[in-house]
Image (cartoon, rainbow, N blue to C red; front, top):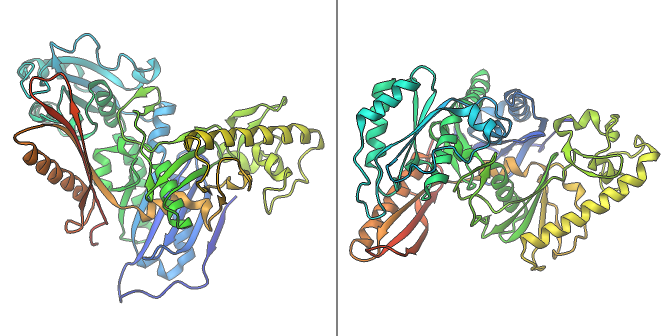
Length: 532
């Protein structure tokens, strides 16, 4: 099922020749949404297409639909922003991943737990081309654990040459002391050639050795996955003779250029929930609220704080692998429009996903879904319950009551029991949320809420983050200034306007049990996109 709407007229150009329109795209597990926005955030075209098995086909269909909708004004599109679960799905499904050699620079101090030891066996088998713990790395105060042994590194690389797509380098405390990783990366490039890419942990993750190592290996495995999506988008734009700047959405709700994403594909993980929360803020006009994004497979609850997603304090597990990314604080339920209701009334966790338009009762199929339960209860405007078999009515009603109870419990958990905040409901399955839900002050259903993910991608800014260790006493001010500059530089690399990128967050946490007082520092810079 595809829906496309277009406003009666496209606003005139703000200035002659200006490329003042933006396209936001979100590739979900069930649908691929796309919108065209004006400079002031007005939605002038939109579409919802079924996500294809290869992802790229659905992406092309969505982009083509909205460009056709604006007609001759398609030439005014200056930017295309893409949020996708493609990287996440590749990890979950163990498909399309590159072969990676994992090198830890931390011997002899970190040999007790080898790289990838805690990974699920099938994921490790799909990715690992070999691993080694070699001399290198630093103590927390900057003293080397041991010198970098280039001969041993070359010997290891000889064992994986010809059967590896990328090398992941992780040094102990490398976010604070980068020299060993940089030297090792230069050696890898010279020894294996330009065909093998290098992923360095100080550019990918934060402090925490094993979690940062995991993120670095995943990043190395995802190079080709993101390249496939990038190439599909560029080919679609080229076919329309459209020269637009392209960006990927990343996990904190901000953007990065395609080139930046090509180097750090793991940063696209978590972009979907972030986009939905940012899009909900834009469409509802609310800065502080709870957001429920109801898709075909799941419902994601998140908190909107000052217009941005509330971040999780805990590390995020991806496909059974622990990482230390700062992700949105999301509570995910296996409840969506395509969730299958079993013969005994059991809800999910299976979902028909993008097949809902041919498998659900209301579309003439033979599978009982949560969409059928919602339509039977009168929640699905425009859909008829006439095709739902009478024998299924009782279990559908009971399933919907059980689903409502789960939703109320999720609201209580995400709000920590505070019942004075509105709930903004977005996503293609938003109609499944009842108008009166315990634990919220009101239920808000903004216009275009079913494509909020795509709106969130289109309105996002860019950012850069640095996490390191600095002295608590003399030298602290200089270290903070250097970290601020590094964060700004990363934001500008991601596509930010150099004159407008600003430091928006500085967190300092004292570290204990050290000979010299030290602080764990996290600096984030953010700003609008640069000029085209």
